Image 1 (cartoon, rainbow, N blue to C red):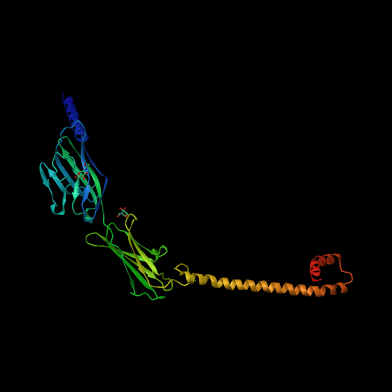
Image 2 (cartoon, rainbow, N blue to C red; image 1 turned 60 degrees about the vertical axis):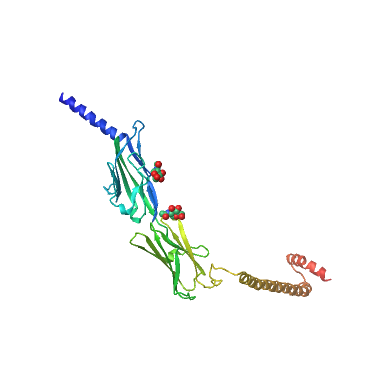
Length: 325
Ligand SMILES: *[C@@H]1O[C@H](CO)[C@@H](O)[C@H](O)[C@H]1NC(C)=O
Ligand SMILES: *[C@@H]1O[C@H](CO)[C@@H](O)[C@H](O)[C@H]1NC(C)=O
């Protein structure tokens, strides 16, 4: 008797547990994005299975966690008809304008998003048909300011060392600064970046690019990239240095300078070639002249030249002799 009573009890407990966990589910958007200083929405709704009619919410607890397993701190609560806003001033409320216990949309609205709001949140709900909870995240983003660039010294002197300083502030999460010249070659490796975080959690990026004398371009671009590698903004800085001499690569060339640079060597090479040709022509002519004068002499002197020499000579000299006669 006693054992069957225990069995019945266990069965009942199991049933109640099954009912409690099975009829209600909290469903949240896994990742929410919020913008610094604006409203952020953490979307969660309570889902009940179809045979639960007219469910009532008894309790809601929105907690901010420091890690997904953390107990967390209450930021917004509802318990048997009364709202609990422990940080009321900070502006956490139900997203639905006149939320009540019949409204299954329990989304959380953060009215003035701060960097500190970034992180994990847990939404716990108890209804008269069961309870459920889910963890969701808020990723806070803040846009970096348009960068400013200045040089040290203020006026860059050619062939002396100088530094370009680029600054951008007010961004989140941590971004990066890259340097390019006018032809989009990257110079970031010659720069050093410094990152500072202000009290409000926003980042300030400062990058210093060293310019070595003699290899300075006329323009440099400082570009700010956000944490996911998207370009936020850029600023072009004119060094007021004339384009580099032709021996060093890169730089801009004006059309006239370009033509003079190309034409000058062409003229030199051209006159050299013409000179060489004239020299060759002259040499050939004098050779021919010499041959013409020596050939008959050789014929007379060498009474019996070899067959090979004979044939060789005759072939070469024939047309010339003909032309001369
Ligand atoms: C919940 O309410 C918020 C605020 O009214 C709304 O933006 C959101 O779309 C709602 N979500 C659902 C799933 O109805
Ligand atoms: C980075 O910038 C891109 C393009 O502007 C944007 O789509 C993305 O959301 C930004 N990411 C962050 C973390 O700010």
